[in-house]
Length: 317
Image (tube, rainbow, N blue to C red; front, top):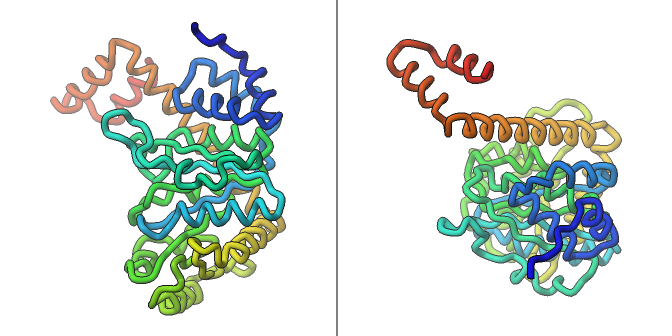
């Protein structure tokens, strides 16, 4: 028997009451690009804008999922509701998430104050999923106080999480060349907190010292936030309280200086731009199944037109 289609406002109301099934259904609509997504976003927007979004990023193997779980434990100890979006690598066959963070964070599975969702990157670069901003809006409107976004292991240029998060936590680990990685990758520019996980290993103090030196050398305007460098052993839950304290301090600074508002406006601008570009691509594909673009591309290749003129013609259609 087919399931009765639920109205967006009904789903939103149930999600607002903390019903995990409704929250999951809304995120599924987001991931699937449902035709009712416009109605869903309209129903969610009046209730959003309160959650603090924390991005956790770092190279593969630094312990992002373990650190996320430790942060959830500490945030719940402070009586905060926590939503987690764990971005997984995608199966090349199904497009689905491969690792299943809900299994890795099973200790929180029965806690009604925690909602964990694995989302497939589906080939989207930047360590996050294309649907992440709308999924964040779902959790925000559902009343979660903090949203943790755990990225796919990033490379040297995949720092998109910094444009999504209110606070970006960069995880590193000793013995993995992470100090050098941070210097090369521009990570110093995106990190609001640096956390050296697995700090019980040799070399943790060296990584911390090097990072502190680089942060001290970086040119920062007067009054700018100076990222702390913290140490944790997430597997044992050590240091999670200091990380949450650091997140709280960064939020207070960002609110006082107006940086929090600027970041959220930038996030909304990026979201609007992404939706508009998706709509344009869909429109171009719907007209002659991309024949117009193929015709214009052939004209540019043959020297009969230039890319700017071709783009103008495409936009004018």
